[in-house]
Image 1: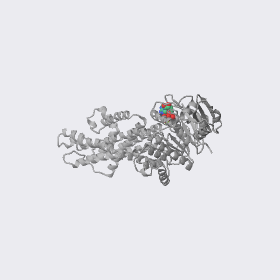
Image 2: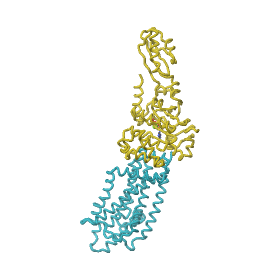
Image 3: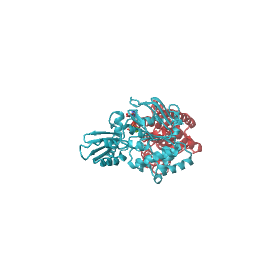
Image 4: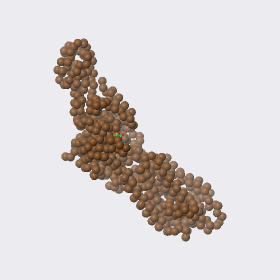
Length: 277
Length: 334
Ligand SMILES: Nc1ncnc2c1ncn2[C@@H]1O[C@H](COP(=O)(O)OP(=O)(O)OP(=O)(O)O)[C@@H](O)[C@H]1O
Ligand SMILES: [Mg+2]
């Protein structure tokens, strides 16, 4: 019963999404511009003396150049960024009476949240994967910086990268969906989301290594879930002995715990928001 | 057999202090089409909201299909169907996909869902458009689709909050037929709200009139009309000075006759069928009539009678709609 409802509701979310191609194109374009314009222009690795491989590796945590370092961060940022929009759908669904319809249906509240989260995670992984693919593709195009992987690609590293993205997506999609259930105004929603989103990005190692940060920011950056997920990617893509405190599996464990706690909290809040009042 | 809906002093006070429902006690009988009639803001949707587990009552008790509203929300949800006042069909999905979704969340076995869907689409005349996105549907098509989605799981009790809102007379008649058929075929109990007296009259077995959150009167349409005193027929004779009163009183079906200057006001339960008899009776008594006018008991009059004031138009989104409908009412009178 529950599984069938979960599947039907998830499929509904995805159908609605696929049927608004302009929104999809718009959300694909944003990360694409980051990779094509921001990353190419902001290639700060060029300030380092060329040919000094150890210096470059030290500066970018083992990545062979800034672009490779940055694109790993971008993959995770896009996962976060894609999760933002999911909560806005809830606000529209409330206005359309869809949420009301679900509220009076004999569906467990956790399934209602679960379906949106499942659809959201799917979208996040798709976009994260897309950014990954584009960055790898740029590596093949002469004249463009691209993502250079220096480690051997193994099944384990692929699974670990996939899980890091999934845990992060699960935590943030549930967070934003729950925000959508609690907030009535779309403007208030986006204001709040930006309050979460940009600080999370700037206080992570997505754009700049922690080594060049002031120490107070470095502490925040090292505990930031964005950084934790990026660490899993970078450790698997450009292994660099001595830089990371923990093995990727440990970071994954912390991320899993973070996701479980956030999702559990969100289920509680959503159940409250969907109860008769 | 337990009554499918029982409320005892049901009450709802919204945060902010509006007492939308102020002690409603009703019993709806099995297989009955029960109408809740009242103006904007009367508390109709709030009552439906409570009975369908969307809103929490502030006081009183209610039982739906014998289940206590306070403790058995989940079981109640399985047994009821609901069409909201506002459209809730997903317009990015096709009509069929909307029904499939409803079947899945109400856990109708897939094979059964397919047969029911085919039948409902046919009954609602939606078979041709089932694969079109709902955003291309007309208001009437949407409403019929929502009705189909509301009964896909064969509910025991069906709640319809203004099912004919915004439909033309043909569309309204269509919905009425479908609701009646569903009751006749499945024995479902229907609780519907409406602004239209004529609709309630045609469709409902019993009607409750609600105003300011309180039931003003409850009964069959015939009982309510009787309480108003039926239709009013006004006649004037061609020559002044003739006393029509004894002639009119002798016509079977005439309840009372009052003289106002040259005109006579006749109260009767069936104004239409009695009119020719009256015309003939006067003609036969050599007192031919100059004019005859028939006035029906309307919502205005029912209201006047039971609330002591005229049917009001409230502010709010449906105020214009209401004004429009009142004009329709007036247009029906002659
Ligand atoms: N969520 C709410 N918060 C506060 N007051 C509300 C809320 N919903 C409705 N009300 C108030 O409760 C009263 C009853 O509203 P309700 O929607 O039940 O009326 P209704 O009979 O369905 O009217 P309509 O014919 O316009 O649909 C109104 O005064 C309305 O303003
Ligand atoms: Mg209403």
